[in-house]
Length: 358
Ligand code: 5MM
Picture 1: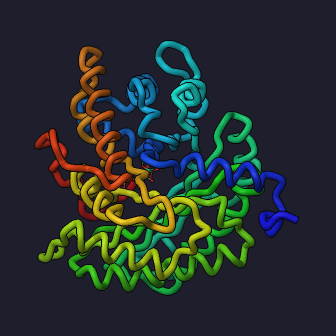
Picture 2: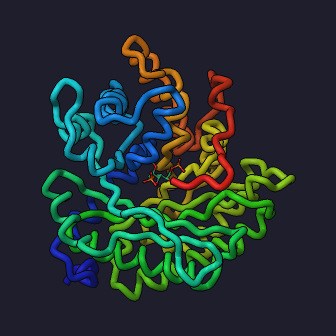
């Protein structure tokens, strides 16, 4: 029997193939799965109303950027987008597949207060997840995303870490049973004044528990992707870290905690500026890694693009160029070949918002 039969899912071979396709050299993930509430905040920042038509116009702009698939291997969608068409009436999923981009779906139902904790959160969405995942697969999704958060200033309490890890593991097993490669995302929020050592300590705890419960739930490690936070000082720390320091700590964490069976590590940007996120990724790829170390950015891919668009049809091309520039820069960073040339002032702006909640 194949080694993959450890996971009793009929999708095992396909999961491994999907994960490998997403973790292919020079490519990463475009996270464009903002829930309607978050998308509303993004649209408000350029003076647009949060209507379905505006969300459709923006998502059409993103997925139809010419040649995007050269740098982007997967796009995470919110449920509305998975079932939506472009403004010209083409199914968004079909357009992604034509671009060589695997469609993905956010399956978590968002964060709510965790009773009994120190003002921490937990992530909802396990009820009905199997049938939702099966329906998303039918609709063309081949991978899923579940984002839960851990706060350093609020603890993290042992309870919050355990809940986050257990929820991710149950989600991962259910996703794999339904043909979706689960992206496992315990985001350690940037908030706080702590130094990089403290983030490192918390990240070690979190990932130890996540892998303990993934194993307990018989999750096939070859058929998952991770979406970790980079190990950095808290956003309000007086001490800043260089890309080399971030890379050292982050790689040390991965080496200690992440089995090499996992094909791809797709970092989130978490409020770093577009440039910082690219430089940090590039620093991590200066030497070969056991995994594909890449990106799954939302803000750090979309910020300049959104601002450039400003909701005006005549700016669509310039906005797509801005997206392609970020995608290409991060593609080069995935290969360790980014030089920082041709970057705008907008790309250097920090995107962190204190106490930010999606
Ligand atoms: C795109 O935003 C994602 C979904 O957020 P909400 O449903 O909570 O609105 C979010 O999970 C995102 O994919 C990750 O946080 C990574 O985004 P950043 O901006 O940190 O790279």
